[in-house]
Image (cartoon, rainbow, N blue to C red):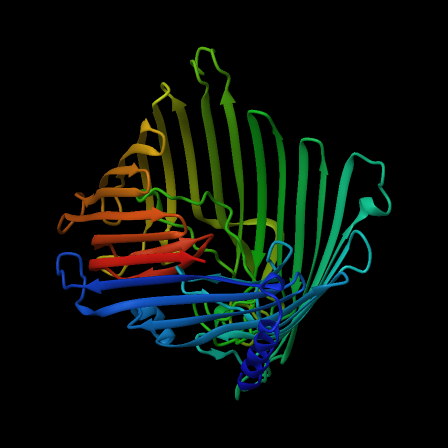
Length: 542
């Protein structure tokens, strides 16, 4: 790190001797702070204030050299992210781009295909930063061919993971060579990723080099499009899969049709033993090499996020259907402005498993674990969700959106919910949402939400109300989530938020209660403790 810092600042000093027209410096600042007061009614504990602060700086020289760094300072982070405590330079890189060549030394983020084999990314809300620290080379030897090579170790809080990750990716656009005059576009891709990690087990012989490969295809013609990717990984015994020696694989397929006012997407996936980490003993969101996307609607409404889906790397198979249609203007159902209809359905099942060839039981450590027929679903449904939404413009000032959601969450398998007695159960819920937006004048609106969740399981029924004012650069909102059906005690989770947005500045102040639960994005989740207190968020770009 010392040598890297000396090199970076030496280059900055050299560039500063040139005209300012040849280089530019830009970046952004993010400051997040929160206080925690005791509130026994919701299980919130009193703790010292917490803060997470980020400063990104980037220097561009002409159009081919870039130097960047990120400084972080974390004070008293929430319990799930305690290992981020401290401060320092967490991200630093030098990037050269010229002659169809792109070379990066230091930290970088990237993704091969859909991420099924390799994805490094930064999401501070989830507490994820699995950036690679090493070298990346991108090269375009000719039109229609893109090559990527990577080597390095992953960030693990303030350290680096022990495992060494190496990878190669190639993308070829066949229309540049074969289908030059065709209206159908075709591209093929392939990836190969390995991780090296020493065998430190005294009980098992663990593979030190674990390799994985994938192939993908994209075909599109006019309004139709098809994407598919298949990945295969050699045996990788680890605590996630119970230390079994079964190979892993995953398949994701997606087809779509779209035209003005109509869109249809049908997707399917199968995941079998695809936990892939650079440290086999890592937990939760630590040191994941790949990313297994969830096939369900990404919810933004408060009550619709109560029972999220958590991706199951050890085994799942499911599908998603998404339908969008704009009912024409001046029709019986469309009215004067037309009506937008969206229907989304998704479900996910366990894998069908039978005894492996080397034992008469499933999932025994040190064995092949299990056998699984590729196209056969398991007996247990893990998750299912139906969303029906109608969005309508009533007049020039008023818009309305009504949504119905039916969700099934098998917490016996997902084990993602806090419970009263420690037992898991299958949860069935119906959610009703009414959202309105009234335009006062340009950039001045009033928005309301009324939500209701009905269930006989878990913590019972919920209600939610919210009003939000957006007045140019000023905003204010107040909301209350009321768990009135709780079997022991009804609780209010109220909050008020206000803030200002001006140019590249944004500041937000909030006071309120937060329920304990999961915060999820794309099937990746982290636990959020109950809290009661103030929070401040400030961002600035320059």
